[in-house]
Image 1: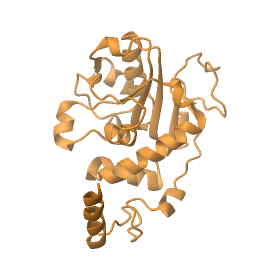
Image 2: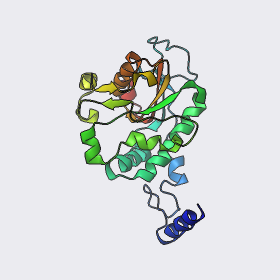
Image 3: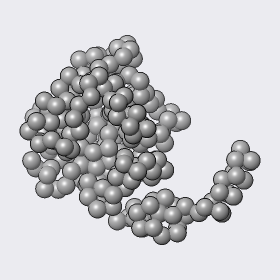
Image 4: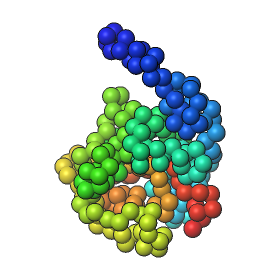
Length: 236
C-alpha cells in the first residue's frame, strides 16, 4: 500500500490530473467547479410515466406502478459532455467520479436498505468489443468493494439492438423488446434490484430490463441514471 501511494504520488507529480471538462490544472479529472455547475435539480420520478415526486410514494398516483427512479442531472451542458468523455473517449476516471456523485444523489431520496442487489444495464457483447467496456459497470465501480452487492453477469443483452439515441421515440420500446435475458434466476428471487444506466430518455430500456427482471423472480426494480433527457424532452 505504501509503495502504491509513492508510485501514485510520482505519477501525479509528473502527470498531474487536469479537468477533462474545463481543462484547468486542479488535480481533478472532474473539478469541483465543474461539478457545482451540473444542474442536479431533477426530482425522483416514475420511469413508467415520468411523473416527478418531491417525496417518493408507495405507488405512482399517475400510473399505479412502483417503478421509481433517480438521476444525477439533466443530459445537457457539463453532464452531457462528461458522459461523452466516458462513453466515446474511454475516460474511465470521469465515470468513476460521476458514479460516486450519482449514488450520493440517490441516497438523498432512497434508503440503502431499499434494494438488495445492484445491476448495471448490459450492452451487447459486440458493442463491448468495439467500446472495450460497459459504461454502466464503470458507474457502479465505486460501490463494488462496499457492503453493496453488484453483479454484472446476471442480466445480459441477448440481441444486438440499434442504439436508442439513433431512432425515433415511438419505436424505442419495440427496438428493445425481448433484448434482455437473465442467468441464475435463484439470485433474483424476491430481491429488490437497483438498475443502473447512464441516460434515460423515454424509459424504454429501463422498462424492458425491469420486465425481464420481474418475470424472472425479482420483487421490485428501482432505476438510477446519470442523466435524464432535457427538461423539454421529459414531457414527451
